[in-house]
Image (cartoon, rainbow, N blue to C red):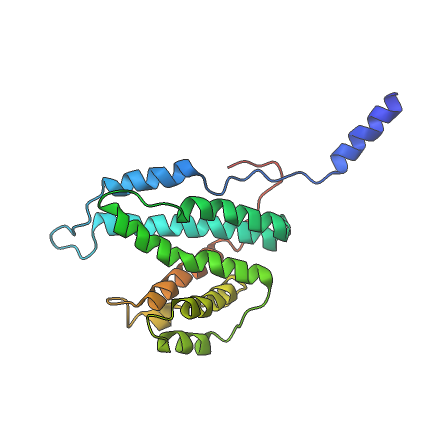
Length: 212
């Protein structure tokens, strides 16, 4: 009997430990919404960017970084493709579902539209079939009419997937349009945020059993 228990204990030790990292949850999202609701979106005298706009950018960075941590751990073979997709689905459900009432409705709606490329690009990366010719993709995307949203998103998602895969984009393509960006430009701005996030996660990993 002792021998059987020892064998079971040894077998249990040999099993790979699961990761318990909490990438994003509803409370975190709600806290950001509450903070934004209390922020001033009118620039102070002598300032070009308002407190609210600064917080909104930090909000976007927070979501982007959380999502790409999932991808990074997939790249580190911590998660299977199926596990990664499930975790992406969980975060997307929080971020992309519903809108707050009142003044923040349009602001968060615009944020969700921008973050659409984040989730779409990550899934395209996981599928493993995407175009890596960023220069041509950007040219194609900028030439599309505003009405061709699905096609524009497909082009932007290819660029995003390439960035997740290690390519560099997209500062040089957005600096001339930052004051009056189209939706495709907004997606390029988000992809630049993704690019910076992937660089910051170059050495990111998680030891099994670690919690956030």
